[in-house]
Image (cartoon, rainbow, N blue to C red):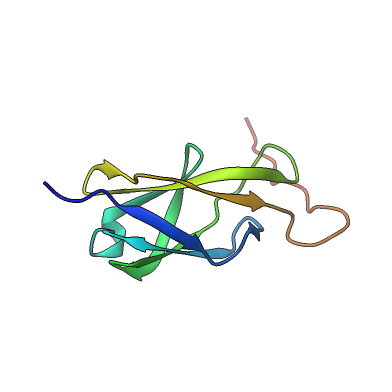
Length: 105
């Protein structure tokens, strides 16, 4: 059986939506696109990486300007990581947040 992916570190403790975050760990699938990365239950885009690091784009978080201790986990080869690491998703800059794009119904 394949070993479970394991997360060792994140390169930031707080990131704004749309930024890139590097996850260091073990037993990630190759190519990088074969991994699924989740911020809580929201899937993130995998931008690159290798078997020991993944670069992901922080998803647009719609539940307020800042969220604390969002668990980041990786699914590689159909197996969820043995652990999750917390990250805070924060505003891109201080002051007023840009308005969310409106969706016409």
